Image (cartoon, rainbow over all chains, first blue to last red; front, side, top):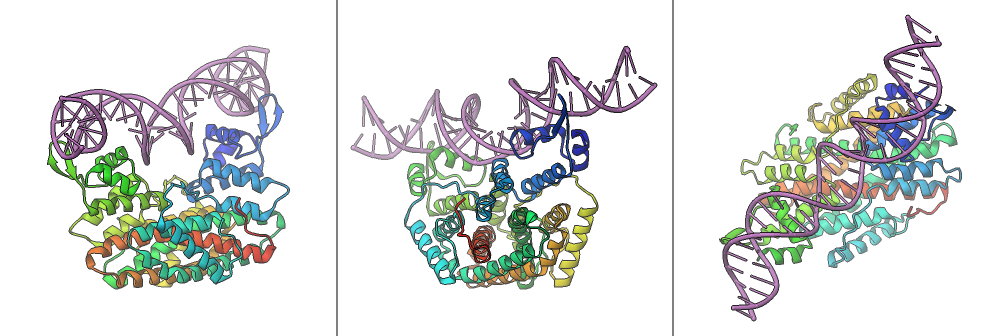
Amino acid sequence: MRIGELSRKTGVPVPTIKYYVREGLLPAGELTSRNQASYDETHERRLRLIRALLDVGGMKVAEIADVLAAVDDPERPLHKVLGAAADRMGGTADGHDDAEAAAARTTVTGLISRRGWRTHESNPAATDLARALAALTRLGHGAFAELLDTYADAAEQVARADLAYVDRRVAVEDIVEGVVIGTVLGEAVFSALRRLAHVDASARRYGAEGGTS
Amino acid sequence: MRIGELSRKTGVPVPTIKYYVREGLLPAGELTSRNQASYDETHERRLRLIRALLDVGGMKVAEIADVLAAVDDPERPLHKVLGAAADRMGGTADGHDDAEAAAARTTVTGLISRRGWRTHESNPAATDLARALAALTRLGHGAFAELLDTYADAAEQVARADLAYVDRRVAVEDIVEGVVIGTVLGEAVFSALRRLAHVDASARRYGAEGGTS
DNA sequence: CATGAATGGATAGCGGCACTATCCGCTATC
DNA sequence: GATAGCGGATAGTGCCGCTATCCATTCATG
């Protein structure tokens, strides 16, 4: 398959494919001549993965490059890939290091130990969580922290389902990629479901129909 | 309070505050002279809200402008505000209208009716969900749809907690803003929790420590 | 085997976005 | 009355995800 066919099959313009190759998201095709290369189904699949992570997952090109590099790494330290996949929300890390931020970090540490979660508080997700809680507190919604355990229950439920799904997946080969897909696209799925459930719940309470803006 | 103090209190640079005023995110201060205006706590609060929606919620400035305009609208059709708040993921709406997309829409419609959700399938969240499912199918993970009900259970659980929280909030005045905050920041909170739970779950299964990339 | 389309590779440019810098004439403050 | 800060306006910046253009080469077609 040549680049034009790859483009037609995936709907990604040829120059964009070239761009992804340049950025290291997509391996180059195998050269058969000085200016002819052939692409196969692995390229097609990778390209679809890239678009899904970009369009649905909202990841940045550089983040995708990191994650895919980890996926392709034959060493495959699974937790490293997971880390790279999970680190995609990447806080802009503003210097706001005030009392709220410290309190939020304490709350997060407490939550992690209370639930017995095997993670370290240096996990970027913990930082993101603390940031969100600090922002809530600054907005006068510190009481939102009372919902944390309900949220955590739901998160554990989802994580268990995800792991069970990955576990009964085919080859070990695909597990790593499957985890990335599940982590990133699963978030999009849950986010959409949460919004639907919100609309439903408030429709029941306030009697309005869920609007489409 | 003058603009410099507002800037110092919130950590937002003065030119950025001016920019937000220009973009309609923040009402202008009350003019006391031709070139002196005074800002109060409402401006301070609004500014913190803007930064939270931007930095933590990942919203765009234009989206925030829409949502805040709805919040400020004295007509306050709550579901409209909710719609504006929920529409923030805004699909890039690519033309990919193939078999997978159609099947995904059917899946979503089925889910909504199965759960008796009071929403219409034209809800942007439904579109986003369908897009995510279509992407999963294209990647060979159509079976992910089997997790949908587990996900939906968790989403309903979270939505119920959110509504209960909003319900026991102070004045009706603050409800609308509270819903926006809960919708947007709650998503960030849950996302972080999900990633933490993922790390924990896979640490238990694979025996690795959750990494920091 | 001539000719037009497509290809690999490289470089430059574009449009959107969230600011940021600069300038102006004015004003609060010391 | 000097200096710092202000409101308002306009132009510029840096990043990001492409997109356009060009070149020499190669494939596909008649």
